[in-house]
Image (cartoon, rainbow, N blue to C red; front, side, top):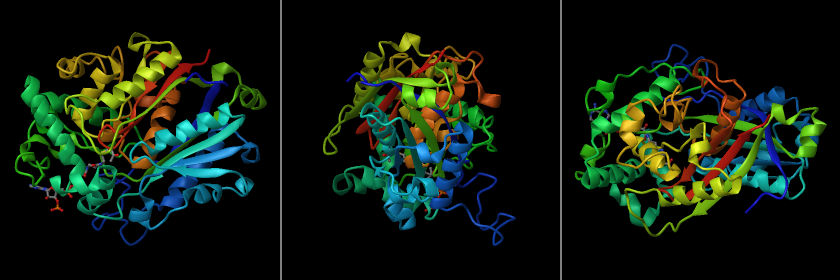
Length: 420
Ligand code: CAA
């Protein structure tokens, strides 16, 4: 569906994404244990909103609508009603229309879609945020909460770590179909961590890994599933992080852009979008991401581009296998060639089509509700030369995102053009 009004991104902010392994993350052996605590969900939302207003210079009184993506704050932090929490970040927001959007790990992407729709419906300035806190529980209890993004009654029993197991099943299927191996997946983990090492906001900024560590289960990199059939197929290095964090940004119409005294060259434009949803109750071919493919193709058609035009991509690498299958879904290469494409550096920061330059969900981290917002802001930041040590050499003209909820169930894709 073509956009009836033009939509621009003019800036925003991420908090640090933190959790186990991040130097700032408080746990019982941290030197600051007992002296300070990890940021709460409201504090993270506040940081992202304050950072966004400072980055863009937007007067909060001029914001017409506000949206926030979040998956399960009710379970992790006993808090619902996050539209109201978002309004609570600034007195000037009081009384404005605001809402929380939920579609599991695509909650942030849905918040972006709601913001785009609001501009199409006549709003001129919209604040879009995403946030999640997950470290209040162990990874094992958190896995039960996250399993609500699957068909809980049918799929929860696959393993205590339900989502890791669902993607181990995809790795096993790919091994059976074309011989995919741990050697292949190691390249994706190495790219994710090495990009994150250059990104001061990334969960894995300080964790350095080698290809040898990532290509096989071993010390500090266990295969941890209890399901005997799936156990050999997934290691910690294949997984996204259990992170806390928030991202926010400002979307404006052309009138909103002018009101800020900005030109198109100061902004990026959302020129295409795809939002595709498949049934929670049926699963497709485990060696395909068919819903990702549908959403991305819609965004390409909307924007009038193909993968050949794309200069930077943010894909939903909730596991290394998901990035691999996303190359096929985006049209970058076949799934059989994807590991070689990654190993050859095609998708590295200085490659032909850089993917997940800040580290993706494996390296940057995955505070579930924030991820879809983070992806769009990351494309903006790359296009405007703001990515510091992980900046791509030439600011790209076109970018694409894919943000996935559940096991290829809800997908939001956004095509973005750099303003000139
Ligand atoms: N040898 C054998 N087993 C070991 C081990 C070792 N040396 N070390 C750990 N383990 C096992 C243990 O069983 C351990 O669990 P317990 O401590 O409860 O017994 C388990 O591995 C996990 O170990 P940790 O808790 O120490 O691991 P961690 O805290 O470092 O977490 C992780 C690692 C489990 C991979 C965690 O990062 C994780 O769960 N990541 C995935 C998060 C996720 O699934 N996110 C959602 C993605 S899906 C999506 O995006 C779509 C959607 O809509 C949900």
